[in-house]
Image (cartoon, rainbow, N blue to C red; front, side, top):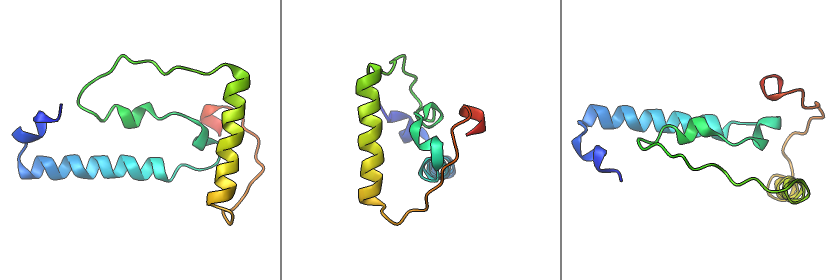
Length: 93
């Protein structure tokens, strides 16, 4: 699956590494409502394309998962700053 790496020069490999690190940093630095979104831009950095569609839970199951995720943030990051800005849409989050 990663055989394309075998044909890359050292400079090409370094450029690929920097690109991937920057993508991981952007994902890591997501905050606020952006934590709730999937990140296809990150997945699109892979050389192979996938037609796999995410399986989306029904609303009650999905919302229970959101609550568990938010509770896990309280447990793992109890001192993280908080805010109460309402979500206003994907581009205005």
